[in-house]
Length: 296
Image (cartoon, rainbow, N blue to C red; front, top):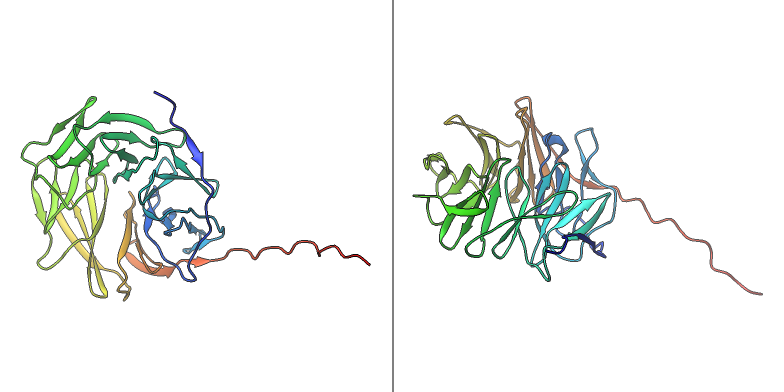
């Protein structure tokens, strides 16, 4: 099998006049999470509670999601392979000729092309296994991998995927090898028990940290945050009044949570208190070149 290498992509710098986010790449410290724009705009934390874009950069395709692996950020692209961020530039990961990949969820970064599942890393992608049919969704923790196909949910056992017995054929989203979102609740893929959301709530985005699940449920301009841990469900509200969709949720081991909205709003919970900010651009102006030569 030929080596899988990351190819440098000549990218466009197309960007909107206002912030527009599509995803939030996780980090061990939620305050270091990276908001990503649809053309590869990267907003980095400034260490003072703000996220700032200082490089034009970008990609020539539409990005739709993000993940991270050991500090390396990956992004899913519509109808294309995933991209890797390194030193402020994006490269496309070669997972095969004209590969159309999907990006996995959870603490471990994965991608799938058709039936084949890859682990993503800072160096080269690694083939993990082939599924019996094309993969529709996938997720992983450090110790396990699950996929969804037209025939249901399967778990990686050694080098082969085996069906998760009695699991539903389809879920709304796979979050990790332990958790999935289903209609009106969170499904534990180990016990196959569902924890229901409060009446009327609909979780649209969620993340998992160990056995803890954090999900968000918008109601117009009100966004509720649910934290499910050890079978107990806690809830609170974001201090924002934006009706923009949530595009990413990141949680860390210290209980911090960062939530990104499509309009560039970032909400941060630290020490039990919420604050909010907005991503901003600080791209340096182009330096003028030398004056054109003249002749007498």
